[in-house]
Amino acid sequence: MSRKSETLVFKVEGMSCNHCKASVENAVRALDGVTGARVFLEENKVEITYNPGGASKEELAKAIQNAGYRVTG
Image: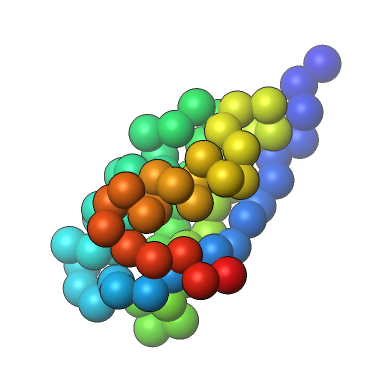
């Protein structure tokens, strides 16, 4: 039986344009289990929908950091 998708929201510093938005969304979507990612530039946040058992919360945060942005919450 498959698990239900969960949604995480991270506060992220350093995103200011559509290139930043695409970089973060693509970095997160590349991880196992991620079914969606949406960046909200005005709110400095990213909303990630994923299946538990794939990428962990720590791996999701690291993908954002590796894309060049700072996870603050």
